[in-house]
Image (cartoon, rainbow, N blue to C red; front, top):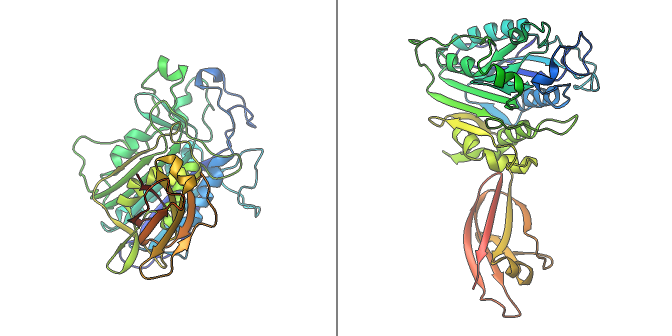
Length: 377
């Protein structure tokens, strides 16, 4: 385990536990004794994206561009690199493997840190292999160490999540970046004995006022990531923290839990995901300001016409307030993509050939991307 203390001062703090599992000793391609009956579990192998995802999430949490509402207190990081990508940090850093016991010890310590103050923010991100039975299951790096009891080295994430509301931290963020496919193992045993990191109790208190829970994909579906790079889900979360989930309030730009959930599909598209295949599931209760952005976040405007064939015939332009109008350099059938600051813009389409009537309309451009169609007749 690698624990980094950012700010140990008094008062509420943000405490993060970040786990990225790419190397699995007992799965296909691993260095340990191969697990028997692996085909029943989808013939799972090694992953290069989760370690990179975890490291990228940590870098985003520590970004100087963010001023956390509850100052960043601690980050605990557990990573197991895949054999084909042994140095995901690119600096020779060695990591303790996130075995089931190591994950439990890290979770227990993180729970106590989060539980120390009701004003704390509990941040949990896990990336690696996942399966779906009656509950969502996450696999530790030593999964399959016992072929007779493979589930002992897995984690019931659904029960763990239900237990978390008993923690005194009133703001809780849970991000699960893992597949949820149903394999033969789960058909044969739909409720496997994978233990939770903490079991929920029927009469436990519900201390969570501001919940943000996001599963990277829906039941029965896979989560994706480019080889040797952060996953699409991690990239979307990072883009959100970088300002894609920003909203202006009281003269400042804030990343909020509500905007991170509301804009998640746009952030996934922005990251290059195919959201027809990977469909994340965001759940947010009351919106909470997570962090103040120290500068105005970037935004992108995609401008085109409706009907579609008018786009290639139009002279497109935009202006912000009384500023000079900016015109598209040349006509094209594809959307005009412009990087701009968020704000209220006037956009227009004119038709020198008279194919359609000229039209101007206003549009509020928000991060990360706003697609506006100028409706012409």
